[in-house]
Length: 170
Picture 1 (cartoon, rainbow, N blue to C red):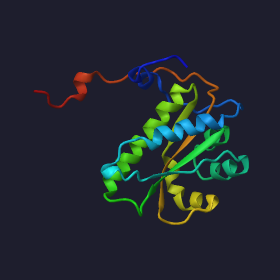
Picture 2: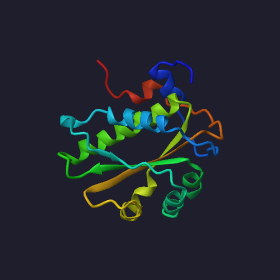
Picture 3: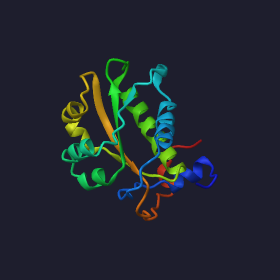
């Protein structure tokens, strides 16, 4: 990928929902997880936990638990991201930290030339996903990242003018 500054990577990032069949290198997956690991968290408690799913049978099982089954099936890697409720000290702050972790991961995927999408609707299937993965309680599903080499060029989007978003400035 081009050597871009962080703001340019942020502006170029789009949700990718169509992926090629090209496998994602283990080193790239590790880099994405590393980016997540370095997100900020209150008291540096790092409340996120990751599952890495490349097994096509498991991906197929997970795809049955979401309205976005086509996206899940097309991805080469799924990264379910959990909140470790036993390490949580303040639920809202820890959920915000997991959000920062997810954003870091999306930005790293973009910087590597990969496509990714943050799937949130799937959290309704928290228990079933933990069951498929053989995970115990104490972990609460926050999102699943679907990752792969993009098979589409997502459309450009616009943002509201910054003046519309600032509610106070002095």
